Image (cartoon, rainbow, N blue to C red; front, side):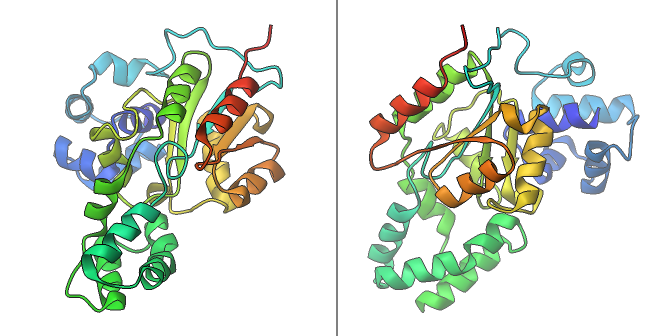
Length: 277
């Protein structure tokens, strides 16, 4: 039950906090259900959750996978059955454009903006620092009254169209998921805005929800558990070579995406994903 609920929540693009708000449910109750501490929640609780997620009661309690029931799934020639896609710098442009926009709007030198951003980014993506605290620290470093980084980020985000089309094609043949280092709530906003495809992913690993980031081993262990297959069947497509090397050490397949040359990168990934005969 816990795994089905978690999968349905991630498919809906909701954080645990957001689902609690929509379902009028306490945070502690939801987390206990998802981790299996509460194995048989009341029918009223389940119905509230199903309504908040926009799924039927039968789907929530009786369907192990909400996203793969109608697909004819394949394996690649190298045995890959599950593909994780990175988000920033892979499905959408990297945050440098937002940093440039922030520099322009505030008059702060671009190197100071980038230095301040990267100084705190990992903490926020792990969920150990709130976005409000990040904004406050960023504003202090830039010597301005206030800043809302999420506004600049969401304004400047542009889909990498070729890669998003490849993701949709891959989802017809394989299980697919998102595995991203990202700040709390940003992925949900991207999906709601249509900046990242809103589709039934087989797994979503949001760093701010699992309290770890790539290239830390824990992130990959969580992703492998959610993929439900051995490491030899998982492929990670990412723009960071450090993240790819960490995955390769664990036995995953890896492919580097070059945001500067998206057409060439997409060709390489598509060639690697041709189904086995």
